[in-house]
Image 1: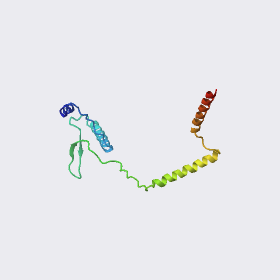
Image 2: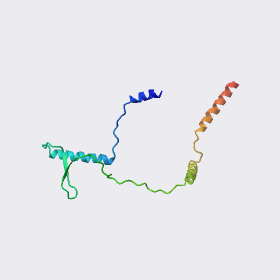
Image 3: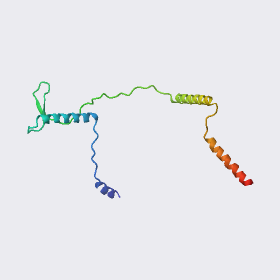
Image 4: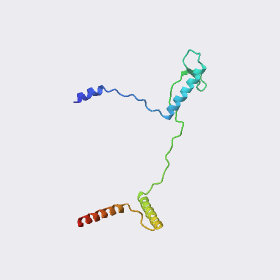
Amino acid sequence: MSQAANDLSEKVVPLHRPIPMTEAERSAKYRARKKLKGLSRKKRDAAKPVTKAITRDGQKPVTETVTQSVTPAVTTPVTPSVTAPVDLIALRRDIQDWTKLHNQVDRLRTGREPYNPRFVFFLVGVGFFVLLAYSAVG
């Protein structure tokens, strides 16, 4: 049984999907592409590959090919804000008190109990039994 599983797994072709780039990698790739485009426009007639000259702190210029490298993030990381702990039991009681108070205010405004949709089903049931009793008598 395990031999059959191994035979099937050998025929599976793995999917090679590129790893998503971070914002820093994407911006570095964009800057490198822009630099290459600018250098290629300046040296269109040149037969040698596109390179750039780099000076490092007073040393002689070094010619390097432009490569894609990861630069540090441009944006600063967001630090989570510190929040005070919340007593959930007290919060639930406050919400219950608030809803009781506002239900009472609504009742005082309308002068009666709020509409109860279950009352309709009660009336339909009573009507059914009244008709059933009427048909049994008649």
